[in-house]
Image 1 (cartoon, rainbow, N blue to C red):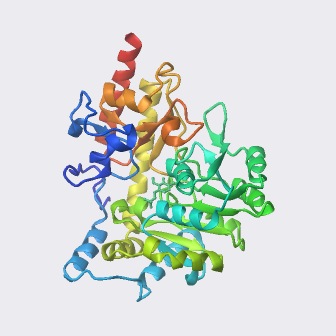
Image 2 (image 1 turned 90 degrees about the horizontal axis):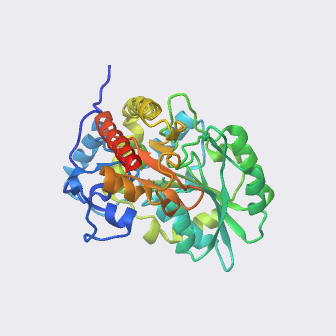
Image 3 (image 1 turned 90 degrees about the vertical axis):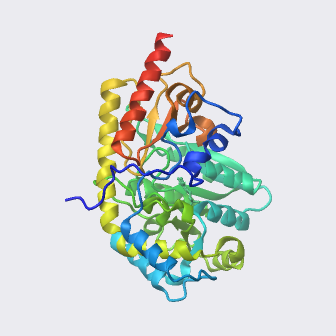
Length: 406
Ligand SMILES: Cc1ncc(COP(=O)(O)O)c(C=O)c1O
């Protein structure tokens, strides 16, 4: 019996959500002058990686109780409850333990990437990423004025992505390569790296003695038959590893800006903490929500995972039946489908623009949003009631058919 209702449509208009109000700037680099044949509230929004689901009632109740305390002064993790909850989560789910002193905080994984890259990267250093990539991996390099080394993932005939270890090693071997930003599991392809893949990549990073940030923000939302292995379990004692995890993707708390940064190296940790007025401030409500999430959110997360599995199955069926030229390998992790549209719309360069204008669907795709190796692909956010997904897919199908008939 399900306890939570993921079919409920929750109204987000008027909450200053990036999802509803920020798409012009983020996707189209435009302001209010950019107009579409659809009103803003008519779009099906399958873009930015947050969810259309209400947060777990357990989290809402904890926030309500904190709200009722009526004073929201400077806040820290003094009683240790948060650390215990998060460390227990890692032990229970990933059989991973670490020293509490390694646990640092950040108002987000992106700020942590920026801060760590700033501390680590000097003159002439480069940052290595796999492509396609989450856009902010590139923006991290831009923020610290460093070049990126891109190692494209390989794709087989069925459209399944894997590491190109030879290329990855060649790029890692570049003496200018200072830092690897590693995505585990991988956004946008949805790959859960196998232990063999993790070991092979880890061996290369260790061989060339590089720093590595393993961004594991998506690790709690895997398909039911998948299992996450933290890079920290593969790189057991490697000091130059930093792990980022967060309750924000898992529990739909992105606007509460809070994440975990596990830093093994004592020098880096000291440097990071010295900047805690930039990166380490703790918001009273974020801490309450994050603690409740790790302590009480598990039943909600398990139901969510089952619902997401069904959303992927539904989308796959829809595409196979109605848009067979669209190639989608069901994502092993994340709620993001990575769909190859190159055979459906070979002549369309700007896929987000096409679907916004012609279908009233907001989505991300292509190299401008995913750095490289992403041409012809769109990313569909499936973390929403199935009825909305159906509408979005039907509109996409109709727009593609109309375009072909033109
Ligand atoms: C791989 C990855 N890292 C980081 C983030 C954002 O992290 P945060 O909101 O904690 O800054 C996202 C959001 O989509 C992501 O996909």
